[in-house]
Amino acid sequence: MPFELPALPYDRNALAPHISENTLNYHYGKHHQAYVTNLNNLIASTDLEGKSLEEIIKISAADKGKAGIFNNAAQVWNHTFYWHSMKPNGGGKPTGAVLAKIEADFGSYENFVAEFKQAGATQFGSGWAWLVLEDGKLKVTKTGNAETPLTTSAKPLMTMDVWEHAYYLDFQNARPTYIDTFLNHLVNWDFVAENLK
Figure 1 (cartoon, rainbow, N blue to C red):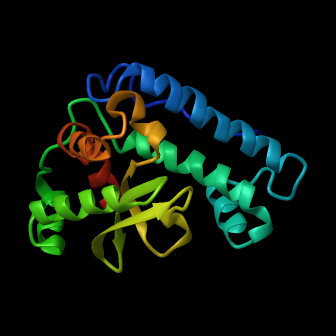
Figure 2: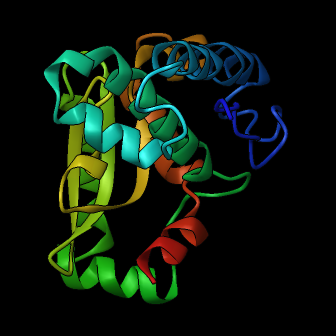
Figure 3: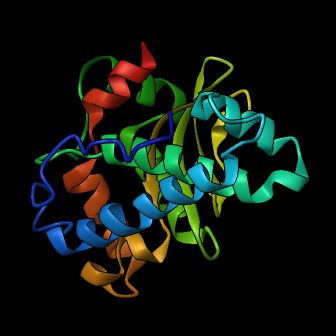
């Protein structure tokens, strides 16, 4: 069975005015779809056909000859995870277990915000900012291009896409404004809580 573009967890206009339907039409409808299409073409009639997305990512990450497969597979996974990392009327300070864990591991929610903003703003070129759980502790990390924590011992809890196609139509080159908007209005803390369990 070839991979299919996973359904968005909300309507394409649901994140407006923060992320427009126009952005989702391109980012989800064209970019994410292209990664799915490319991946299916690359693994057709190979030993990777029929394997799970996570298996393909791990196998292709370990084989430099499979860089094209890795890039497309990881981007399919990263984007799906990103859509779930946001929700309408999200963002702001979390509550409950998530807030308690953030305060325990970062010292304060404000410290987490500062670290996450720094990761997103300083990822040179294209990539991702992540909140991950590693060795029982929350950490902020960043990855370039299609790289993903799935190839490490860290468990991803939430991600923010900082490829230009994620924000350019709505924010032009103002990546810091996009990062602020993501944290204040879009983060799906319920998804983080589920992943933390």
